[in-house]
Figure: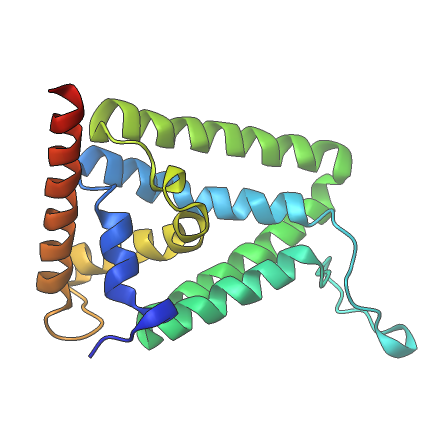
Length: 198
């Protein structure tokens, strides 16, 4: 049984899915969404620590509890609330990205690290806009709902892979219900588009 309100997985997935129905666009997002998260965390590595540890405690290994850590915790908790199983996997991936980005940031240093992070962002975002403009032929979800698009993107991609490859469903009937909502949304969008043309 699905949840409602902020943690309504069907609603979030259907919203995002309506903007990503073309197979090539889905593949592009599968390849680029998680690297966007990783490179964002790399850029956030260079923000100052938000916590002052007593007695000189330091987590070590370049792991700074800064904006990137807070970002990771918020995303992880949101995903677990959406779906315990897939959300826990997404949360683990988020924390692995944070650790990896922190280690890379420490190794590269600020002067090179921000350039690598920015270059990755440019490549990945360009790929996604090509996916929407050339293949999907629909503006990205972020133009209609910025927060939902950014927050849902990594989880949507992961859940899409789990649905397609492992036939995973958060609960029985999820796929059928979501596909119906996605198709209805796409049809509504196409009708509005047709009215603007005519």
